[in-house]
Length: 145
Figure 1 (cartoon, rainbow, N blue to C red):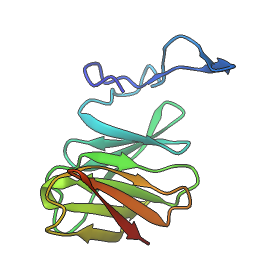
Figure 2: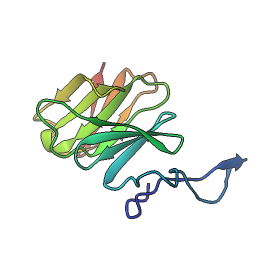
Figure 3: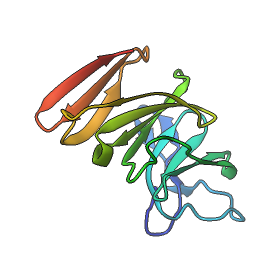
Figure 4: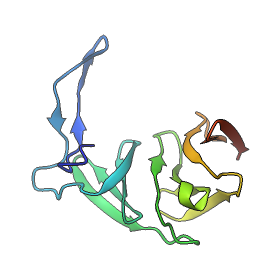
């Protein structure tokens, strides 16, 4: 994601850990992905927009825009994650000391919030999707789902 131009850039895999040259992924007629702060890929490309909405692109075209209806309302979402093998989207919001789990239609499944999450920096999801690892300063919190 080139934040300045709003372009999504792909590098085609050739073979033996060799990559082709950069190619613009968005369809030429498609609106640029301006204002995105994070992206995740599961076959579609999910963009986390600065206004706390999600945009889903597929084959270079915008498929849907999802306005999040979460309580408390998001203030500053920092990271989105998903994969082709996981049924959910995971959103990190350090300002409100939480991680949010959504289905891929944008409906909330769960959220975990704690005063202990006072310096959330990053997170990872286990391959099977049953564990969240939250990096909070120098500590790692493990959440079993």
